[in-house]
Every structure is written in C-alpha cells, then in structure tokens.
Length: 306
Ligand SMILES: [Mg+2]
Image (cartoon, rainbow, N blue to C red):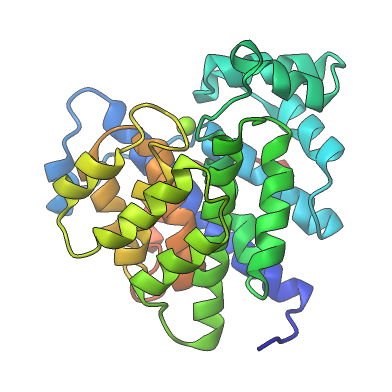
C-alpha cells in the first residue's frame, strides 16, 4: 500500500523522533554522573535539570536540519555540517573527532571516513545514533529510509557494520512512524523481521537483529548477555539490543528509556536510538509518549536546528 506523505507531516514525525532521541541522550548521559542510580529512575525520581545532550543529539540535529531544508540527505553538505557543528566536549569519540577534523580542514569525506581505524573505517555506533529521525521522515518507504540511511552513514562510517547499524535503526523508525499513521502498533517480531530483511545478510548487525527476534520473550539481562548494551561502542554491540528494547516497548517511551538505563553500557547512545524509534511511534506529550517534564528538563536544542 502506498500513500502520500506531505512534507509537513514528514517533518513533524522527524521532529518527534528527534525529541525522543535528544531526551533519551540527555537523560541517559545523566547516569554517567557519579551517584546516579537506575533504581531512582525506576522509582520515578528524575535527575535534577538541566540534562545536557551529547554528540548523538548534535549530529541528529544536523540530519533533521538537512531534511527540513532540502527534503533529502546530500552527503557533501551533511559531512560539512557534522564537521562544522562538532563541539568536541559533547562526548564525541576520538575517532569521530579525527574524521570530522579532517573534513573541516578540506579532506574529502570519502578519504576521511576511509582513513578511520587504520583504514578499516569506523564500525562505531555513531551513524546509528543520529539516524532515527531520518527513518521517521520516510514513514512511507523502508526502501528509501534504508537508502538515505546508508548515505547519511557513509560520510563518517566506511565500515559495513557501521552502515548496517544506521540502516537497521532507520528502517525501524520508519516502521514505527508508519504504525503511528496507520493507527496500530507493529508486532515486535514483525518489526524485527522487517528490519533484518533490509540488512546485508553478511553483517553481524543482521545476525544480531535475527537473534534479537528470538529473544523477544526473554528478560533484559538475558538480552544484554546475548546482544550487548553498547559498551563496546560498536554498531554490532548496539543496534540489535536497542531494537530489541524498542520493539518490546514501542508504545511506552518511559519504559523503553528505563530499560536502557537499567541495561547500562553506552546509555546515552542506546537511549538516544531507542528514544528516536519509540517517539516516532508515540509522539510527544501523548499517553506513552515523551513526557512533558522530561522534555522540559532537557537542555534546549541548538538554535540552528530550527
Ligand atoms: Mg553521546
């Protein structure tokens, strides 16, 4: 079935996804502050505001700004936007800082991205962490979500796993947003099967998403044990776990974020990814959506994000 999706609707979906991404990022990063305990969040006690967002949000804002302005991702412009807006204190990994510095000083992005990690290219989770809103924008086509996710990833992540992580998250967000427009929640197993079908079967990310589908009935520690929690900061260690959480809690944003916090690992990024996918389905300020007080506690987004 195809339908017409107007630009205003696309942008509204992408912005809701960005709200979920940035709140997840900002709240998740609070749990790296000494003394913060996941049990407090589980009991409904929130960290004191403001919650600063990190690199996940900064890069996602560039993705949404590009979509708002041009309606699509254009790689040269996106690479430059990432490079020029990078504030290194926002928690960028050393590899990302190096690639973005090269781009900022005139190295073409294909050369800069390929140079990372001694020429292997990055398989980090950085392309996945920023791409959810792009998936929501493409609620009418998982094929276009996947193709544009690949382009958005390539400017910094040349490794097939880094790219696969972005494709997986974008397709999940597209299906989540599609379910919102259709008025029904995608079944967790069907969601993960559709994501797996969009991925290169030779990747570990693909195998991880298949494994995640087999683990839908298990509890959180078992999922972390089998899928990881982002602590290795790779796409392989992040994408499958985050989509397991999102599929299970697609209509309950607070529960989804609490699961990321409880799981530990790279919490700002896992909560950013999960938040982007879930908020594409729930929206903001709705039952099960991004809570208004959480949004108010998040540091405001940069003025250039529109
Ligand atoms: Mg971060």
